[in-house]
Length: 322
Image (cartoon, rainbow, N blue to C red; front, side):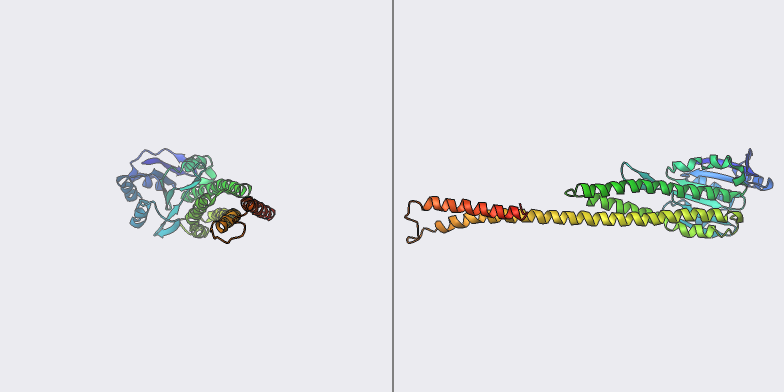
């Protein structure tokens, strides 16, 4: 659906009553630009937009298939940028990634959102409150969207950081518990998040060059967004290393616990084996075995069992096996 369609002249929104096919021509005649925002459009809706603004067919095809990596592609006098907004669902410990496609020309910008991306809904209102930035034209919209997307990445990082700190605390405060499943889940979320944002660096580098239709004065602003993205990428590497350390520590703890359990089992087996051995010897019923005809033989055998078991128990206890 078309969320909004506005014409901006000299940084301010103006009311233009015209069919969609004529809006671009009206904006050009006024020296302004058109910003059309769409959310999960159907084929028919987007076909009308593509025809009205002369969007390249390959870019249109990509925009209707949301599973795209972040990228920047140039088509004649326009650019096509794919961004991947993200948010962290703390209750499920999941990073959810949406898709935002942006078409930028000299006098138009078309944004196509797939998924909730609620944080992007206020970008238009924020820009309309800052006419100075809107004087850049469509470039100001692209920068504002990229800046908001990368700022949201920092929010995702804080959510991941809190849960990973919690994992580290649990691993060392409750060493007998198994945390591998949760650690692996968080590692996968970190990996998927890294895949979603890493290709964006290349696109931001190209945007920082400021080639038309990107406004030349915006170069420093895109480089600033790139710097923020690199900080997020560096932090992700640190979180991944922390998860590796936590996983290795938990595996080592599980291994130590298994060794302790084996020692305990072995110690009890040894204690039980002693009376079993004595009973086995005196249960062979040979005629000429010593003490078979002696009245004290039975109490002696029982005493030997008790003494040997106590001696083994004290020895294993002193060594920490029990």
